[in-house]
Length: 187
Image (cartoon, rainbow, N blue to C red; front, side, top):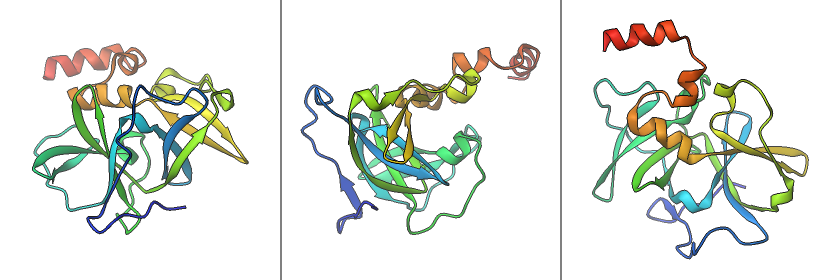
């Protein structure tokens, strides 16, 4: 069920966020990257907009697609396909940008499509499977829905690396220390 956008081409989410999630239900904005379905905590999401022309910036981190002007504020756009090492695809009419705020910073995440706002019970969420640390570092849990799985993203971890443009400590810990020393010498 795609999210319909209003005439200003953005979907504003409810302002009544209060103190957080309901005692009974967790709320996530669900979106797709390829065939996988992800969820992002609605408390971080400000709005969802259609994809717009991006302004490229010189020498960005590899996952930054560019910047946009959103009502007078310049925000960076993170390509989640690049961020997760997925094959690139052309933007189309379903491509969306999820605008989030974390730690006072506003950033957009470009996704293939946005599906719906899901309300799920906490008891159907499990911790992420134990794979390598770098494969799980952005996944906070897996929601078991009727016949499908929802990969729940930790926006704080995505933002930690986005702000600096460098690897997060957990990703650096799983990488090659010799290569890290070479990168420091080059910097």
